Length: 411
Ligand SMILES: Cc1ncc(COP(=O)(O)O)c(C=O)c1O
Image 1 (tube, helix red, strand yellow):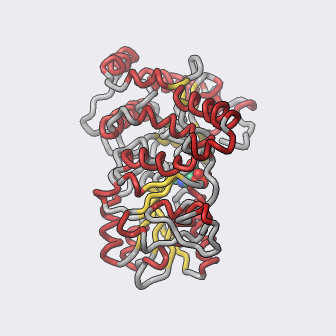
Image 2: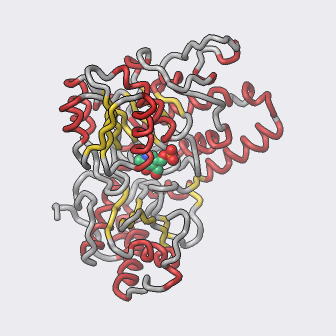
Image 3: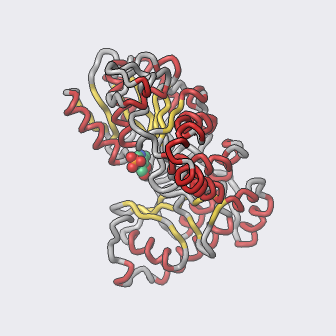
């Protein structure tokens, strides 16, 4: 164990909550009753601001303002404006980020757009432990574009890129383990070999202190429904660094990426900068919720938030270690994303037993239990209490009941 001090009692955890400079932000969230919600890595909690904003967008802007709201309520500018606010959280320039589509669609658009940028080799690379949608999209695109596809062993995407060049799609934080990629090392390798890295920031934005500019990232996407609390199915975003924007074209040349969508020209002319990656009509209600959720982020410094998230994870890991539960997540004191993964053959049933006890975590087949922490609303005492429940469930094997083994569609 690294020399990091973690609380050893509920009182110790409560003392950390009292001293926490971010503690007041919890009041901005709608958190149901006594539930301990440790699933913000899957779906972030709702903020009161997001709920109010979506209500206003629906009732006043849509029902009241109807079509006029595209101009009067500024709907048309929401993808850019929301992207610009999000940019600060990922270390990007405001005009380099646009909110649009889903991560799956954006990975496709960016990977296709990056192919002409990759010098020498036309190969699409993805690691075998990458989030499945990224693997499926990259493999599908390789067939469509008639480009070689390589599924590299876990952790070996960088070596594959160095060796062959091409386009690598890579998560900044692994969805299963929460391990961080060395983004700068990947970008250096890409610069040396003429390759391109497309970053999936889904488990990184709003939780770690990302600095896309400093690490030399050129292209990225990520979701907003996890740590950015944009709501279920909230739109994703695309980052395109200013100096590459003019050289890349979206393969989905929709009218919202057109320089003058309401000129209704037959010929396609892309917008400047990241905005050229927009495709169709933006989902205004979801975007409004995201815009409301970002109000909380306007008040925080990501470095401080990331430090707290890590400390919450350290506490979880210390308790899991004491229970003898193995974890593939980076160890106590190490840098990592916002969740801790532990492995157990009966992980699914344990997650159901936890839910029955008021602790929400999630399960990823075949054996991973994930506990996610948000610096904005998770308290140290929540982690302590959740781990008390985990201890009880594991020690008494109370998970071993038929009701906890019935598989739901979403795990
Ligand atoms: C790393 C990563 N990429 C992509 C996705 C999902 O993409 P989409 O928003 O298209 O469903 C997830 C969802 O959890 C994810 O964790």
